[in-house]
Length: 298
Ligand SMILES: [Zn+2]
View 1: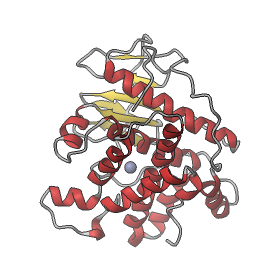
View 2 (view 1 turned 90 degrees about the vertical axis):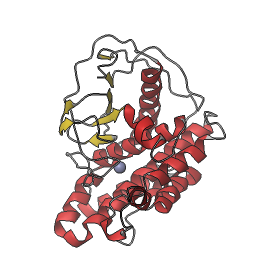
View 3 (view 1 turned 60 degrees about the horizontal axis):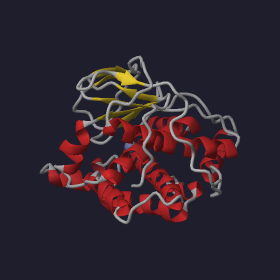
C-alpha cells in the first residue's frame, strides 16, 4: 500500500506496547484526508433496515460484537493515558495511518447521512492491558470493544498467527484486519450490533447465523474502504490479493482445518473462507455500503 508517512499521532491512536515505552498522541493532524470527495451511496440499506426495524430510533447505544472467536473475541481496555504526539517506530506510523485513513472515510460517510459518529480509538499492545471490556491478553487476536469504542491490536498477532500459521502476509493483510474491526465500530455506531444481540437472544438457535452475518458485513465494509483507497491510487497490485488471502485465512473452515478439528459449519461464527472473500470482494467491487446488507433473508 502506498501509505502516507507521518510522525504525528492521531488523537485516537494509543501505543501501549511495553517493548517501546507507552506512547500515544494528541495532535489532531495526522495526515489530511485524500481530497477527492467520494460518492458511493450513503449508509443506505444499513440505515434503512434498522429504520424499518426500529422505527427510526436506532442509532447510538452500546452494542456488542459477536460471540468470541479467534479473530476478534471481545476484549476491552481502558486505554492507557497518552502523552506526546510522537510515534515510536514504523509500526506505530503504519497503524496510525490506517486508523486515520479508515476513520476519515467513515466520518465522511456518516456526515453525508447526517448520522452522529463518535470516533474509535486504536490501541497497539504487547502485554495484557485493561480495556473497557475487561482484560486483553497478549494472545488475543485483534478485536473491537464496543464499550469503549476501541480497536485493540496485539502486534505479535500479525507475525505469529496471520503470517506464520495462516500464511497471510503483506501490509494489506493488516489493513484488512484494521478495516474489518472498523466495520464492527460502524455496526456499533449504527445500532446493528445491538440489534444482532437482541435477535440472538430472541432466536438462540440462529445465534451463530447472526454472528456470521455480522462478521461478513464487517468484511464487506472493509472492502468498501479498500475501494476508497484504490480510488485514491493508494493500492499496489498485490494489495487486494493480500486482503483476500487474509480474509480466507480467518475463515472458520480454514481455522478448523488448520487446528486439526473437524470442519463443522454449525459451529461457525465468522463464515467460511469463501464467504469472507466474497463479501470483502463485494464491498470492494461495488464501493457501496448498500451492497453490504448481509442480513437479507435471515
Ligand atoms: Zn469480526
